[in-house]
Image 1 (cartoon, helix red, strand yellow):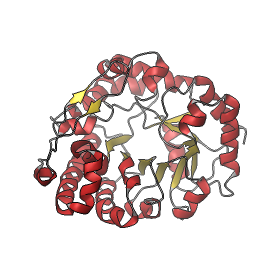
Image 2 (tube, rainbow, N blue to C red):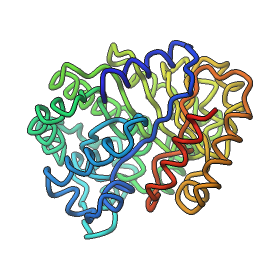
Image 3 (spheres, rainbow, N blue to C red):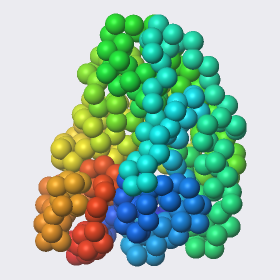
Amino acid sequence: MTPEQWEKLLAVTNGEILDPLPVGFVIDSPWLPGWAGITALDYYASEQMWFEANVKAMTQFPDAILLPGFWSEFGMCTEPSAFGAKCSWHETELPYADKIIADFQAAGSLSKPNPKKDGLLPFVLKRLEHYQGRIEEQGHNIKFAVSRGPLNIASFLAGTTEFLMAIRTDPEQVHKLLGTITDFTIDWLGLQARTFPSIDGIFILDDIVGFLGDDDFKTAALPYLERIFQSLDVAVRFFHNDAGGLVCAPYLSQIGVNIFNFSFQHRLSEMKDLTNNAVTLLGNIPTREVLAAGTPDDVRNSVAGAIESVDDRSRIILSCGGGMPPDVPTENIQAFLSAAGSQ
C-alpha cells in the first residue's frame, strides 16, 4: 500500500468525505492468479510469481486501494496448518485444510502453535522478508498484520457443522478451543507487527460469525474478537465477514473495528444505521452476479445505485460485498473505477 493510499484510509476512517469516494478491493488467491495468467499452485509455490502478480494488479489499477496489499497467504490453509491440518494442493483450485478434531470432547486440549516455526506461517513471513525491499521500491509498504478469525479457524479444525453444533451442545469445549485459537492469533499478529514495523493495521477474516444468532455471537464470538482487535495499538482495524453481517454490525465499535467488508445482501444505508455510522463500510455491489458475471454497464449501474442509496457519504469505501471473486475481468474493474470517479 502506498503512503497516499494509507493516508486516504486514515482520512475515511476519521470521517472525512473524499471526492470522489475511494475504491478498495480485497484481492487474494481466489482472483489474482487466474487474472494474472498463472495457476493457483504457481502463485503459492513461487515467490516471484506471487510478487509479479501483485505488482501487475497494482500497476493496472493504481486508483484502487488493493487490500491488504501484497498479501502473503496460502489460502485457507495458512493458519490451520500451524495446528497440524493436512493441506491438499491443486494446480488450478484453492487448497483445502482437513479437519483434525475427530471427537469434539478433545477440542479443548488442542495445543497452541508457535507462529515462529509451525505450519506455513514461517513461509508467509519469509516471503515478505525476501521481497520487502522490492515492495518498497514499488512505492508500497507492508501495513497489515493478517489472520483468519477464531471461528473460521475453528471451523476448519473441527468441521463447520460440528463446530456450530458444539456452540450449543458443548460450550465448555468450544470456549477452550476458541481461547487457544485466540491466544495463537494474538501471537501471530504480534509476530507480524514485530517483524515489519511499518505495520499499522489488523485485518481479520471470519465468515463463520455470520452464521450465528445474537446470543451465540455475544458468547462465542464477541469476547474473542475484542481480544484480537485490541491486541495491537494500530490505526486501522479491518474486519471481513461476507456471510450475514447483521448480527455483528451493532458490536463492531465495541470490538474496535473501524473498517467492515460485508455481504452485498446488506445495503450501505442499512449498515450505516446498524453501526451508528461509526465504522467505515467497504462495499457494496454484488460480487459474482455483477462484478464477475455482469457487463461493464451492469457494473457502472450497480456502482451508481450504491452511491445514490446513501445521503451521507462519510465512512464509505466503494467495493464489492466481499473479496474479489474469481474471474472478474479487467474491463469490469475499470468500469467500476470509472463509475466511482464520475460521481
